[in-house]
Amino acid sequence: MRFNLVDRIVDVQPGRSLRAVKLLTLGEEYLADHFPAFPVMPGVLMLQTLVEAGAWLLRLTEDYRHSVIVLREARNVKYGTFMEPGRQLDLTVELTEKDDYLATFKGRGEVDGNTAVAAKLTLGRYNLRDRNPDSRPLQATDEALVKHLREVGALLWGGELRAAANAPAGSDGSRTPSGVSGVSGVSGVKES
Image (cartoon, rainbow, N blue to C red; front, side):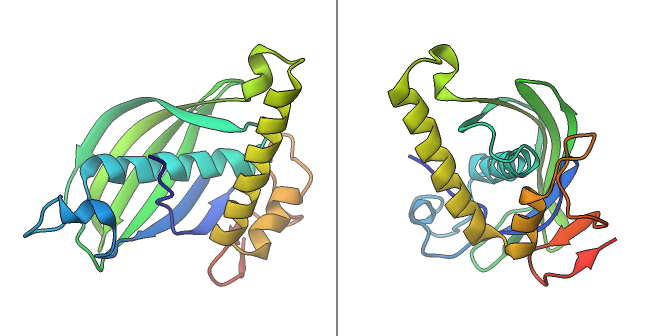
């Protein structure tokens, strides 16, 4: 099963951090079983939402260089308050370390200012064609995945973040429009 749990990206500092939100509604299938009389978002899905936020930060920072981003390790996972339908999970991920294959993040999800989930995450990234660079089908699949992810990304954030994604890379690999250190997808206001 594939989830798309991040509902909106609200702020990004390419190469540094990303803030996003998850809005929980009673219509989400898994709530029927978790739990029928007391529906709450499962902890593993709160963790998955942090993983997705980290993956979006990598995609934006690296201009969708990799078609696949996967969780390699979750450490120091802590759960706090429950997340019930009608609530919003405010997500923050900070990139703490990155090499050619792995990236490490500190992530936190809060409901009404109270921690619901926190973890240190390590994500791996690659292209399907990496094992066989001459494979046209794998290259085509990578291209189709990246195209789809760009379309989903365009739904999650506005034009300001697309401008950041298309800006020239800085010396640290980050991408921001000239003179802009932060970009907001909610109001479209540039932050300095």
